[in-house]
Length: 609
Ligand SMILES: Nc1ncnc2c1ncn2[C@@H]1O[C@H](COP(=O)(O)OP(=O)(O)OP(=O)(O)O)[C@@H](O)[C@H]1O
Ligand SMILES: [Mg+2]
Image (cartoon, rainbow, N blue to C red):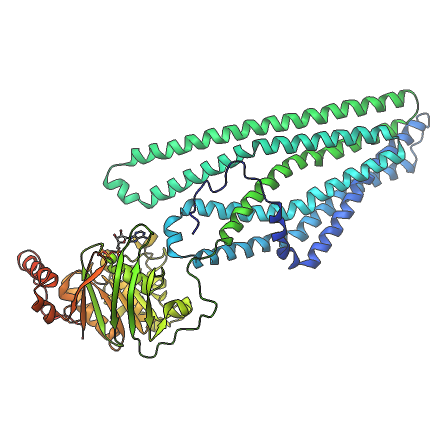
């Protein structure tokens, strides 16, 4: 897996022009519109190039009829034509934009969706490594970049070059080669200068972006940890860290601005110099009578008209390079292959009975740290296996492997004899219901969070699930009932309430296999008993993997596995394990002593069948 970091691209990374080819499919979707827009573009350019001609004839007419006393209709017509041409050039370019807007916006939509889906397809490890704030910025910049590339390469670079050629042609035909040479030299110098300087300052732009990502990630992370910050009175500390990032950002932005100022000034200097030379040539020729006053005006108009888009060409080149980098980065996100993928021959998982088997499983999240060592056990169909053991022993890891958030390093996990790597992830995951150790909710209403277990469930089914998870009383005590907003990540609910929401979701999902990871750890003993009753209903006839710290909740499981340091050190039912007088017996002893002394007496009979 490629680690995701802010500095993936070295400072001298050159934009990849091939990225543009990746945009073609988005254009192809609206072939008609693209052609229409190109048509408008041609009209608009023709009008633009014709305008100075109208101006020339007006001036020449006036110049030659200076002594005439009556204003005839000819100059009036010319003026009207001049105005219409100007209007036409703007109108057609607006029409072009209006027609093309749909293409660019649809492309942004398509890409945003693809990225979103792709991110959901990435493995858990990727998401644990990433920085949400920075990623969000990358997506935003990338999609904007796509729209920019589509609009500007097609409608700015190409037409500007076209216009330069047209004007050069006209000047060549109407006047002499001197003007053409002067203009071409100016354009070449201008373009070369813009490209060189733009390349030089790209590192500043990239630096500014990286600093922007960094400060943004920091701010998001800090705000997500709001409570932790308060617990330790670290507001000032957080602010200082953030300010250091902002300081870097400020410096980077400043360099960015200064280098931009240098670029703009240099461009203006080149344009100014070219204007001086060419206008001086024209003045000379007017004075010597070689060209008319109208010609002079026309040349001036062409120069102004030419350098405006050229000015934009510098900007556009900069932005296109930037957009290329952003889009490349976005496509890079898309290009990373998910580590966990469906095998080409993957079939849908068929759960007939629901036998789960871990066979000599070895696993580590990272190559240099082994977490599970040679773990083998099986859960016969419809049975419940409980896993107990110290914190960090690898209990939740078993659940993550069964759900295929990660692939085992050695050994295999099978369900009814089908290796979970050989079936589709979709079918595997829809067969397993999980009540996770930490439930995080969507920032939405309670109802929608509950219904998330099965979005097409009827209202009545959702209420039923809430009842079974013993949420009803709580919900009725809320002023807004099911419409209560649960806050970001569900933080407005208590730990036990969130847990019950998670249980209700699984009840709704109604899967053949169940994983309960400390599903009732946040509940008081009374609620726990009640819910365990409900879970017993749910897990009847279902294969269940139950992870718990409180041994009293697992004592009736068919088999209890005791884990230590990634190994199964004991297994058997409650009575057998007590008889072995090993780890389990000691744990039981301890918990009961604590139970007697401090907490409520743990109930004597657990619910597991
Ligand atoms: N994504 C991860 N990357 C690296 N190490 C991890 C990752 N997730 C968990 N670990 C490590 O794997 C070990 C086992 O974690 P696991 O969550 O399975 O423990 P557990 O038995 O469920 O503990 P607890 O009872 O506290 O929930 C821990 O030492 C943990 O630090
Ligand atoms: Mg755990």
